[in-house]
Structure formats: structure tokens, C-alpha cells
Length: 71
Image (cartoon, one colour):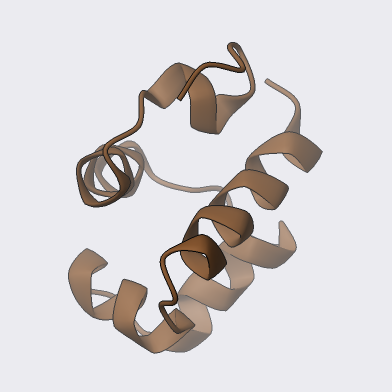
């Protein structure tokens, strides 16, 4: 997995859906600070949060992880 792609994709998806970090953090049941750390690459994104982001944005985990360019 390319960490840079994951970071870019979760940030781009959030921005494309006009959501704030706080709004996404609320969906993930975490803090805005922790979510910001995911977007910076300071913390690894847990599987449960990856799944929640896939559901939120209606994309595959392969897309977020950079394994596939098809949403």
C-alpha cells in the first residue's frame, strides 16, 4: 500500500464531498484531531475506519488504498 496515495485519497474524497474533518471524524466515532492525523499520515487508518469511509463515500477499499484507480 502506498501511504501517500491513501492520504491524498481520503483528503480528496472528504473535500469532494464538502465535508470537514470534524464531520468525517463524527462518522468514524473519533476525534477531529485523530482524523487529522490519518490525513497527515501520522497514524495508520484502522480497518474499521477504512470500511466506514468506503461506505460514506461509496468507493472500494482498493480505491482508497491505491490498488485500483476505479472508484
